[in-house]
Length: 117
Length: 112
Image: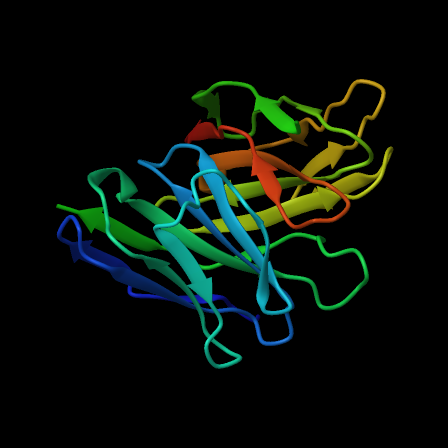
């Protein structure tokens, strides 16, 4: 079964450093997402991406965050200057094999645990 | 705005017991509704979905019916197993689908 792949599985970074979290979505999916989960709690929406641009973003997704699809297969989330409160599990997801309505459910990756020290 | 409310956990059941996890939603229009499951140390997996009123989603013995009149999408299973121990998230997405909103999650423990 097709998978969404995320790397690294765990990243530790110092406060103020830049981090890039990487994702390879399912190849025929057209919609891509980033979510985060702090301490196994609520799953929070960050951003959705379609047709090489951001479709929607949350208030969490401020100027410190950016997303990119640099080569047609990878989908990255960059945090420019990390803060302690950015420590969380970050999940990438993709959806939609082109059925018109974009959401018949997401396929999530296994996540990257980001620890900011 | 759109929101999802699900029952607080944890829910602790004995094996073969009947499971209900309540979920209600607030949304404009006609959202799609989902249940996702998260096993320890893993990402979220889509468990089942319903895209219109009166649809019943089902998978692995779990069921949920999209009830527009009560704005609910309760998850049920007739006989739980130890392997069902996980966190269950109710979620909704509007027709545009660019954002899915998740409930707070309900942790289920099943004892042998």
